[in-house]
Image: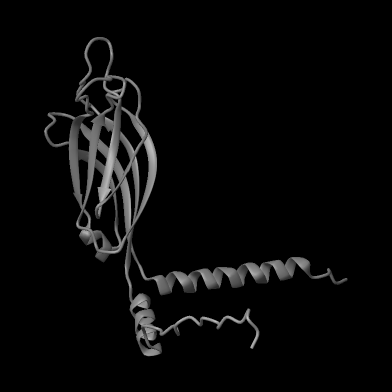
Amino acid sequence: MPANFRPVVRPDPFVIDTTLDTELDKAADDANLTLYFINIVVISASNLRNEDIGFDKSDPYCVVTVGGISDRTEKIQNNLNPVWDEKMSFFIPKKPDVVTFEVFDDDSKNIGIGARDDSLGVAKLEISELFVTGDSYEGELKLENDKKGSISVKLRCRVMMPIETEIKLGFAEMQLEGRERSMNLPLSL
């Protein structure tokens, strides 16, 4: 036997921690998964109170929260009647009941210890029924804790099943392939 011989170390066999039936059940659960889709447009706010001192006015932005997920608009400098016209989309796995709109005065220019953005008001909109009816909402919401401030929003709620989305995408792909084929056919005389 040669002196250089070393036995080969073989790895332990890999044992799968699941079965085919389990994986098929998981796929069936995913096919039944429901997503709640909310399209929101934060249009504008009006009659916001001024939290800045001197000649400056508040620099408002809006934070939208639905189902524990938040997004925000850009800030508008020195404006108590800002127009954002910003679109936001939320995909939520659990049906949300409320959308919260909170308007803040950006105080990032006030560098100092404890400088925080001031809340200019909060508005809440009940949306759980919109998923059932398929309706949309467009209107003005009064800001709580503010005498005259309001925010103007538009939103639409939809319930989406991923399998439905896959079918729609597949159909769109078939349409595009058909259109592409028809464009490549030679013209007949």
